[in-house]
Length: 258
Image (cartoon, rainbow, N blue to C red; front, side, top):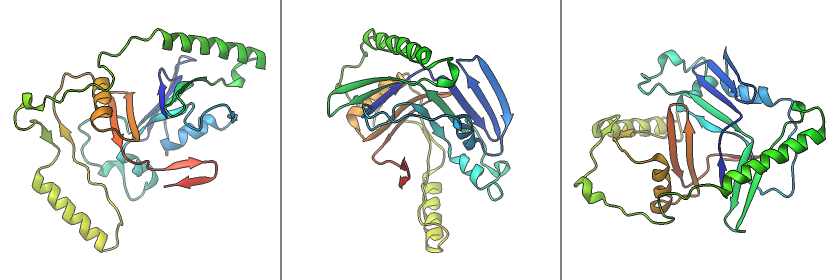
């Protein structure tokens, strides 16, 4: 399955404990101090009752999409991990960015089908008929946008890797030296042997200037390194392109699969 969404109806942006909620349909912007920003989406949705529709695919069909940074663990371990003790933030990006997507397109690559989906919230309308009619109008607009889309500049499945143009290696900068990374690996092993942890993800950030379109980078990545879970997300202050061979967690009704 592939899922495409655009223009979220609402956004939640958190930096430490300061949360900004932007309701684009109502034209409202609220900023508040919250002990645990990760609970804000649940608070917003507490009166919603999403309906299960059998005709829809067994995939994401609308809702919250975004990212949580590594530092969001500080919301969970409030006493042990304070934001004041966090490493220097040299990127100045939000710790949390979520968008509420009411319009989504779901592609079923096996069945060769595409689903256009628009969710309506009944509390915004005076009657079910009004909600249905407005939903159908918005669905027609969504279908019109799909039919009038411009073809991508990069042909499907066509990527030329001209790495020789850049010399023997791609010059860039790293967030740590090779020796510092090796030391971090040894330290991680010591923590595992001591029973402090059973798994750890060591992160190293590489930077390199490019004039490539981020979406073309994502499409090229699909060709040279296809993975079951890939992401292209336009967020506040950044564009996230990600590729992973596995899913972290999946929650379905009462089942949780790590």
